[in-house]
Length: 64
Image (cartoon, rainbow, N blue to C red; front, side, top):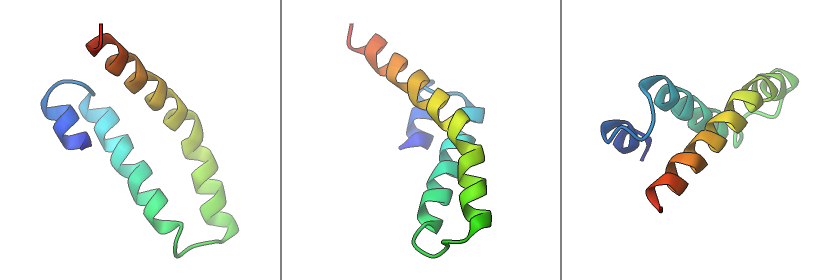
């Protein structure tokens, strides 16, 4: 989905790479419960929140 969004200029290549990193991090939650994993996830949250807000803006602009 994020590669498709990149292909159609809805997100930047940098944002796509971050989204794929978020996906990988989420997929690891089923296997890793340690403190290091939690710290890694916490470090991703600020950029994740910004990327979500940016994506919401793009979606809303497309609906106008």
